[in-house]
Image (cartoon, rainbow, N blue to C red; front, top):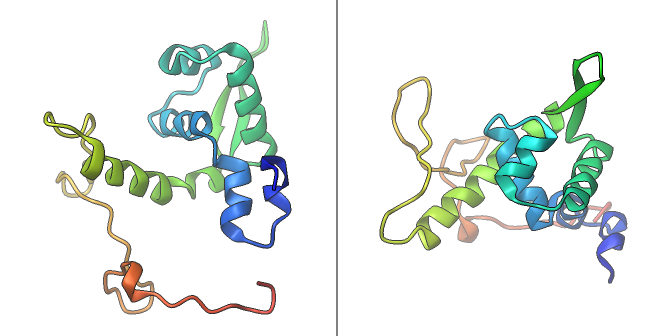
Length: 149
């Protein structure tokens, strides 16, 4: 299967990967959550070619994950902001970051510490059941195919 065909697969993961599954795209999203908004700032932060950055940003806008907003009229200048759909990626991205912290951080520890604003404490991503509130791990889940699957 070709990368461009993932979006038409009858699989939620394949469809999601068609929108955000490339490493540059994930790093763009990381920066967007860190309040990077302007093309030049993404370019500087990521050290990515203008063409690659343009393609990824256009894809994220087309997927409804980012939107362009004018921040200057003359000349017209636009920035990229996360949409509600984009903000919905936060738990997945944070879980991947925390997984990287655990397995790839090195002797110095993680490069960024995430603090919960409400209590001020560092925290780790924990997946919990929306019904009973218990933590959920890979061995705690059964997948059930549905008619659409």
